[in-house]
Picture 1 (cartoon, rainbow, N blue to C red):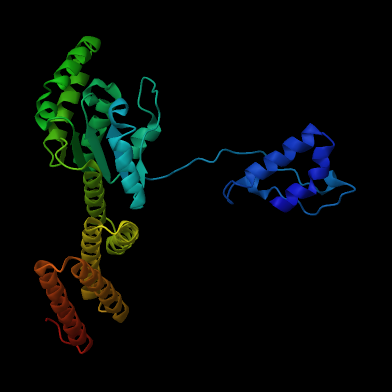
Picture 2 (picture 1 turned 45 degrees about the vertical axis):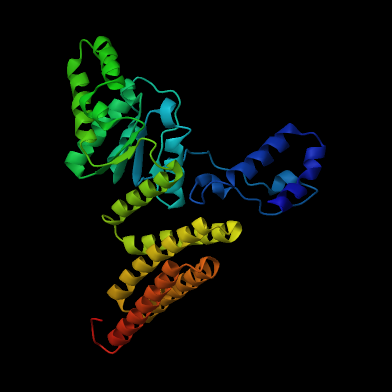
Length: 350
């Protein structure tokens, strides 16, 4: 790209605006996917004496239409949580490599767009962030009706989150939800069946087991727990779930390790130990399923790292409980080694 730019620097110095625009378009369309017709624009050679003779003009540009399918759909009231809780959930799911749809349109038309409806229909999991003003939005309620339909018709998993709102207010449409429906009934006085469908959808969604976020614990920890719960729900219905869980928890463990090394606090060390425990449990599941030598070796490497972190912690605390924890881990390692040996010899069971 830089070579082409330097090659045309003489054209720029001539002040020829056509040449400048043409090269700018060339650089831009080179960023399109290779499947795009525009990417066939090439420069066969460069001759300073006759630069334009070497240019092959591009074919007409055609729009590239995205057919992205998302694993998770987020339904939320923008003014309540767009730049706070919902953005944190979206970021946590993205870190876990979960394809998540979030509607970033600040203004909407009279009807929900077909692309948004398709995102709901295609999603395996819909996450509904019920907040103080969720029910005041006609679009949120229309999304909710579609989500409940997908749950009934397609078996879509629905995860309700009650963010600083009592679940009974959602279920029974009381408090701020009652005020919202008073306004809806005035506005849609000639279409009360629509309003009733919103009430039914709220009641059904609020009866699904979900997450209560009333500020009794750290929001950052809660967000991570919710994201992991969503990931596990996805893994339960998709192929390749075990490998993805291993990759996810390996990434989490690395992040916890980096943080522990950076801060050196016992709290961060405990979080690292917890992450390694989770990673080891999933690797054990894989080893037991596959009986591959590489899977057992990978499992043992994780347990050895876990044991080392626990030893490091004990040297800092000299706490009897931490010493007992080390002994339990050592026993677990011996059990795993024996199980591996038995399986290699054709015997199952510890």
